[in-house]
Amino acid sequence: MNVLISGASVAGPALAYWLHRNGARVTIVERADAVRPGGLPIDFRGTAMRVLDEMGILAELRSRATGSGDTAVVDADGNRIATMPREIFGGDLEVPKEDLTRILYDLTKDDTEYVFGDTITALTQDTDGVRVEFEHAPPSTFDFVVGADGLHSRVRALAFGPETGFTHSMGYAFTAFSMPNYLNLEHSGLSHVAGDRSVNVGAIRNNTEAMAFFMFPAPDVPRNREAQEQAVRTAYEHVGWEAPNLLAAMSAATDFYFDELSQIVMPTWSTGRVALVGDAGYCASPMSGRGTSQALLGAYVLAGELSTQDSHEKAFAEYEHALRDYVAANQEMARQARDMFGLTPTQEMFDAMAAAGTDDDSSDNVTLKDYVRLAQ
Ligand SMILES: Cc1cc2nc3c(=O)[nH]c(=O)nc-3n(C[C@H](O)[C@H](O)[C@H](O)COP(=O)(O)OP(=O)(O)OC[C@H]3O[C@@H](n4cnc5c(N)ncnc54)[C@H](O)[C@@H]3O)c2cc1C
Image (cartoon, rainbow, N blue to C red; front, side):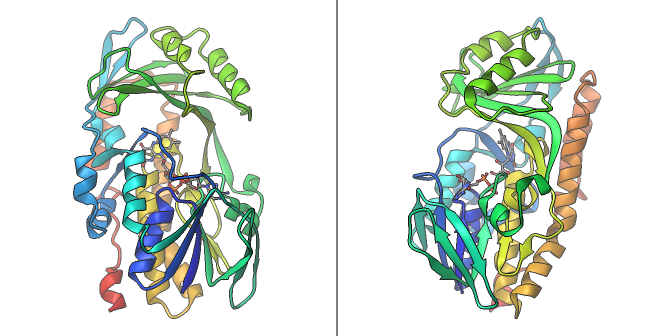
């Protein structure tokens, strides 16, 4: 089996690992010139921990854990009004995204052909394979193509249609960027909610830096950075606390992230010999705190089904069957978290959110097949 994956972040390399382990030949094309850096803390929950263990990278990831503690929710004068337990943001294991993607790359680089600085420009499929054209590399044919290229997936646009058909806006914009840790936070965070907009800041990279997050209502999302920065400044014009100081660092940030908070909802995650995995197929938005786990479980199941079913049609159908409910629960959870905006934050609210994730019947625990045994 000869598979092309678009995207070398979480879902792409995890899929490459499992496909190779099951005997496939894998190429990954990544638009960036290298695996992307960035100290954004991301986390894993429930069954995803078991998959990391089976990949042999759980111990290394644990050694890179952020160690982040609780987040204090403060009023405009900086007085603590509640505490957000660390589980809400940190799940079962929180690591910097750059460490995760480097570990996944190192795990797969010897058995996967990585092509950086390139992208797919056209896909043509028939019953035997998919002919792929690239911006730089010569055209080539693969048995399957998988889009692991995130929220704004090129593979999805080429194979399924324009993004507008699958994007569900949550009505908010989301901004994140790193900055000096001028508040001297130690493995902790601060959060301030002013009506329907929030501002958070947390220590990253072992307290040597901090990352600021802003979420605010935005019916229209500007596309260029200058207009995006202006939209954030306008939204926080009358928000006090540390917002002005945090915004003062925005223009200098080299990792400025700005996007509409949105989810991807698709009637099917495959068409012919092309499939989607992770955010490309079922982004739940940063509000869910489950995107990385979804990407990992998606990769595990998709590779497992492709390796154990006697046709790709059955494999793709089983892949969806195994994960549809899990994804729907994560997307619903994100919408519920979004709907809490505008409510006055209370300790009961945060305790209930934290408890939902640690429950034995939490939706983070998914029953999955043991594909390694099935493939033997
Ligand atoms: C600010 C923020 C905070 C978040 N916090 C959390 C959290 O706390 N917990 C959590 O679980 N999740 C969190 N997430 C979500 C999580 O980062 C994603 O769900 C996860 O990274 C999805 O992985 P992925 O591999 O599917 O896609 P991505 O990580 O988005 O990777 C897509 C890859 O495809 C590449 N690519 C894009 N277009 C092309 C193209 N045309 N050709 C080739 N390559 C391409 C990109 O460069 C990138 O490397 C957060 C996201 C954001 C933005």
